[in-house]
Length: 443
Ligand code: 5AD
Ligand code: SF4
Image (tube, rainbow, N blue to C red; front, side):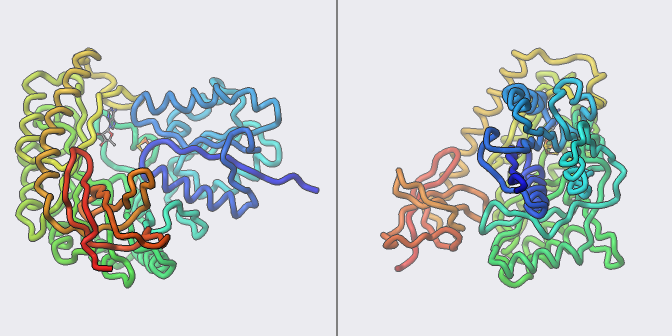
């Protein structure tokens, strides 16, 4: 009797990676593999990796080292995703027990590569970046029963000086609008009520077929799909974030009350060095469109601290930008030099302790802003999608359209699970990172 084929998969990095893993898992199931919960139980051990910052990259090499001994038991190892693409065959030198190295642009061939390692292939690679294809499979195994991800565009054609993504995910490829719409309709029919559109730069989406929809048009159409109650998208590039996107959002509340618009720096001089293709003023114009819109939208961003040459004055401009915009939340990172990128050659590196000091200053300022922004919601009624229950607190966990976690009490349901339902909740308290409330529904 043939032995059962099993795999373990751990995912690092962004939402795109998480969704790639859902598709890879679908392909593995299709080829007769069963997923297991630990490296020890698996015949095939896969890591879907991230290389956005050095720390993320180190994680995979630590894992490979930790589990190296399992190779003697005949287990196979595969490195997928961004570190695979970036390091390529060098991974075999550093970790000779690895049999498969495959970047995301080669996932359409993932099934074939699996067969090669099953047939004893020692150093199997999928590293080509010149694929015109997107990885689009009907076998996707979805993690969340209510929210589904749809990739609309892969790769990135920008060349931000700090960023490894154009090297790890290759050039931009948009999926046809017909296949995106078909997937959205199918997901709605299967009971998913929230769709999240994914891409490194969703704003530059352009339907490659004759209809040639742009991103704003696609958003508007997806929001009209029967059964879809919420649509989110990530991530945006300010240069390609045009006014019709805000107009489309205003026109249909299915498009959630949230815009994530990564700014990276508040200094036009640093933005130019980063090759971000917009000035602070141009960024602020987009913020004005959003602030002058019909609904109140949550605004969130990404910021990099300590880019080469960032002066105290530049940093102060980033702090001032926080005061001006009043973000609802932000992700902040210390600049991390990445292979192949333009910034690698730049002089005037900021010392680690100075980066740390600036990061803490920024986070402290943002915390105060968030406490204020969240407190403004006390007394309001928010619709939440229930995501689960926190037994210890005796509360349900909900997510608002503006992407906040809202933990709330609700009359005893007699054991009925509210997950996946939409409820109105009155906000009663607010902290820096979440809200607390009570169900406003009459039961
Ligand atoms: N160093 C630090 N942060 C980075 N990011 C991207 N590349 C780097 C880097 N080299 C951040 C950006 C981006 C987010 C996903 O990660 O802020 O928006
Ligand atoms: Fe990490 Fe970027 Fe790759 Fe996502 S696309 S996994 S953030 S390097």
